[in-house]
Length: 132
Image (tube, rainbow, N blue to C red; front, side, top):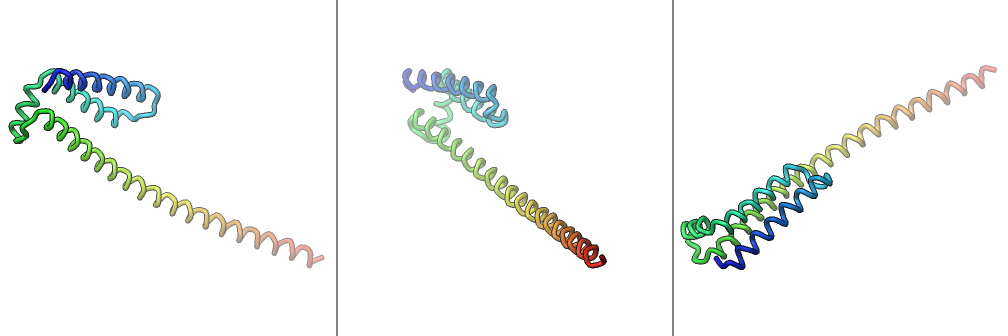
């Protein structure tokens, strides 16, 4: 792994960590999501400081170039994260549908009771008016 690539990994990782901290402080990012990105950045820093780890893992997997292994690993991790977020979106979408259906049922009940109350009120007024 070249020195330029190692320095790039360290710089990108540090900026990622700083950006995550800033977003958590601004309450624009939940801590559970920032943990993933923090661990991701730490992994990149470890690979850049100790390239022997990446060399050993690339030999273990059978990838000839350590740089290619790191890119392959990054792509794999991000695809897994993307799939996880897709599952989270599906769950949230189902919850939204359930809440909308529940809200509509509640609205119909309220409208039904309001209509019944209005009919009762009209019949009450009509009885009063005709009894005179």
